Image (cartoon, rainbow, N blue to C red):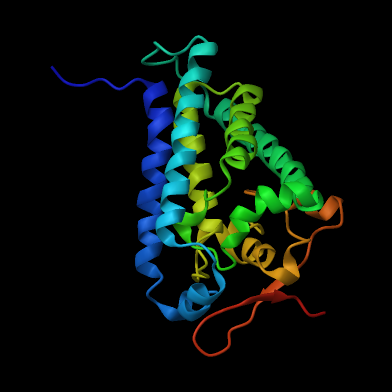
Length: 252
């Protein structure tokens, strides 16, 4: 008798597995110095938190996310469901777009307020900015309260507002996870499809992690519309100097 995993179980744990697998790919690619936005020396000198601490912090956040996801499926009455009726591709695409817009809207305003409020920044959001030089598996390294408020609740809202099924959520949250990891990978790889289709990418978010860019580029993880609307958008360019790239303010 084989094991049968419900859509709800897969929707809870597949994004976690995807997070570590996709991060692993970037760990390997990080050995190619010409792809890095910062040198390995900068990573060691500027980051003020150890990688072991980052791993523990991410695992804690993922544990909280898993608990909330399980509770969410129970509240919505789908916790015992193994399969759902198939939806049209158009419906799924609309749900994806709605979920992306909801998540982007939630994260922009919460993220920006955490920078504007000195207390919240000092005691909560500054945890994430201990990684001045971001790397892939540090994407979800946050204070637990920020992880709950920004990512977990934001994800729950995107799920509820979009009306997606638990099966669709497997693919949406896996995609959102890959996008978030990619934005924090610290690499600029030619031909990366995320760089082609999204202006919000690894260089865009890397710029925000630098001291000179901390008041700009709050949008995450998909679009840049809220930054453009509210005047916090800062254009960037990837200037190659020697071995590697570096996100800098775009010169007119």
